[in-house]
View (cartoon, rainbow, N blue to C red):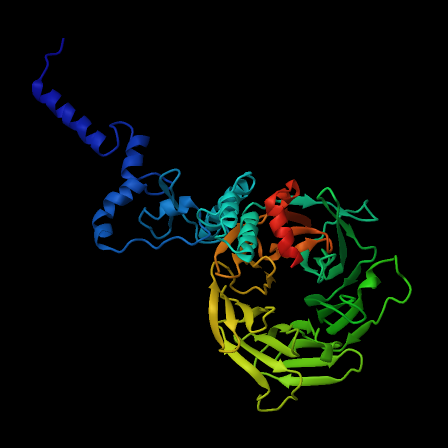
Length: 533
């Protein structure tokens, strides 16, 4: 038996202790997973603990990390507590850093854009799950129907304010319902993505534009009707028209009677020139084949926007916004007036009481044209002029006509007083960088709607700019899948149902915001009195 030597035993303990400190063992140079996690030598990248210890002194003296964007989820907010390492991504769930691959030539690259898209999808699914809950968060603190009823009975709340606040409560409770589009040819369901939907003045009909897979688009009309049981039915028109040109802008036109025609701006493609077409709505239905109405096509190329005048003095007049020009034309006589401007005109709308046309330009300028004045070269015909910081995508004149809403490509939506040419209200939360996106106003309920480039539909209080609701898209966000919406108090006609209509991809959704009104009670009575007024 070998005699024990205390010096040799002490040397053996020192060797084992040194191997454990450095994460390797004699005879096998492999590190344990526990030591790897502590010291941050895993192949996936350095760990959070190692980086925190390495950068402990730096974090104490440096500024806090930048806050995440609004589209990031709560997990991305948690990752902001970890130091940001160049070329690495921190996963808060696994508490580790992972290397970001620089190029797109790898089989499965991990890029920052993919990670941001993943976080956005998490946030969208989370919001969709919250929307499915029967009880949702109130749009304002302490705002609910029982409290509003109590304040109304005590005489503390005027009737108009009561109805407006009730609508806000109903907006917060809207839930998504998918609509089935009925058609005479049910054997071939709609597989073409919606690009644009525009409702007429009473929302009995909605003009639709769909992208076609082989290029170009198709357009037609959907008819809406409501039943006594509170359901909404949709029927597609018989005749659909196809074109290889792109539809830039649409508006309903009242030539023979209200909303008798549709005005389209078609952009030329290759050898096919662009034009502005005035089509009768009866053209899209086989039920009235005789005398469909006046059908015109005007040789106006590269039109960005269009608008129809409803003022009795110019009731057959329409306008188109082009590159550095505005054309005002009489559809019957063909009389044309051209106004030269310094930028592309992307948005237009006529006032109702006076024949004044409001225009929004790519330069951010908003100006008005009084049709009773003739154009001059010095642009003195511009009755009103003011500016926003970016290209104007939409303008909407309110019923007062002293106020105008304008949205731009920086995501800013402002309410302007055209008398003093100054903004009096701003609606925050809209997201847009370069898309041509409209805004929608429903003054009857006091609501403003806009769909952002992030595919979220947002609703604000028109009075004070408070964000009432953010609705995620049922499909993943993409630049070619931005939803198009129509909001009305009477979807389906004068006795129709109030709510939001959303077209995205090849699906159509309905968000009824007052489905419990059918239960009767004082809420229904208050809203009925308000609607009659």
